Image (cartoon, rainbow, N blue to C red; front, side, top):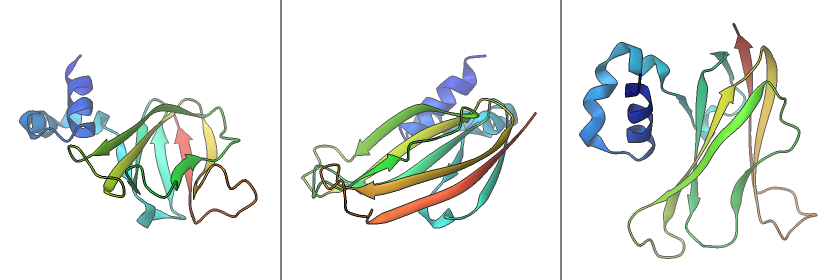
Length: 138
């Protein structure tokens, strides 16, 4: 039963050494569906217990812009993890990858929104917004 956990860790850490685990159909079906900013406005169907990996591009310690999950997320979806991945000793401004793992916890339809902004600019509209819908079935 540990195979799916190891495969998920391998995917999140981009470790090719464990890529052979992904060929197992049971493991592949248990991994989160990757969602990017290119999928703005789409609807995703999940079963209770399945997850989405919302993968967003950002910069390492740069201008202060960061992606944040908008408040008001329904209890039908829970935030399981938030990780930031950079290449080695990334210089400020270097590309980075931000992953939010969202898991379906209960039946329903949920609007999910991410906003890209500077936390200290409270009255400034976000520079970017990503919104999508998650429909959760049994």
